[in-house]
Image 1: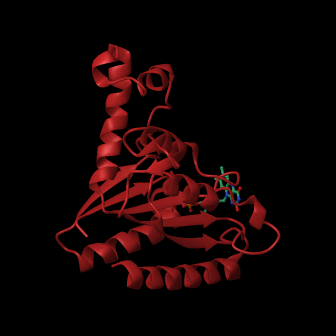
Image 2: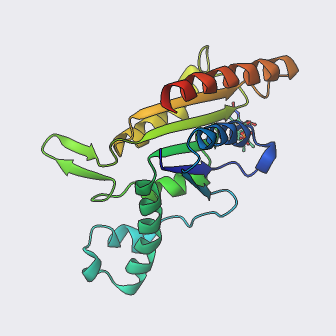
Length: 206
Ligand SMILES: Cc1cc2nc3c(=O)[nH]c(=O)nc-3n(C[C@H](O)[C@H](O)[C@H](O)COP(=O)(O)O)c2cc1C
């Protein structure tokens, strides 16, 4: 393990449960691999622009054919892709918002899901280009979605699995901190369970 990319998407700083548990994981990985670098990409504190016309029209063009606005739009995306490509391990801290992910994280995904850079079209259909990476996603939710009647409403974990898998990141581990809005006892159970999940994952990947 040489380079860890830590993507934070809760605006709640240290109050954030996804941030807290994901930080423990990053700290643990770092203690086992002291030479590893940790790059923090906090999309809540430093929001990325939404992709716009220049990005959409420019991304399919070779760099020498892009106009100035297209080149500027793609330069940011290229830097974010480079950051992701350089990482062998990605840790994402993700709150559930309205059954999905925060729009700040969606903006990051729109920048890094790039044809020719993170996926390509092959004879067998789309193919992810980011092979050989590990990812740990810490999802925090007020309710419970791993089981029970709300399971079909989880568009957070299912979306992240789909989109990261699409770009080739299939060695993916999820820590669920859930039920945090259901009272003190549920919160205590959520913390105990999340710690146990993180321990198992660290044993498997570190
Ligand atoms: C804008 C907003 C939308 C939310 N939507 C949901 C939701 O759809 N389902 C849910 O279970 N919890 C929802 N919650 C609760 C959060 O997922 C929960 O507080 C979680 O701990 C937030 O992550 P964080 O602690 O990392 O900031 C929402 C919270 C906010 C602020």
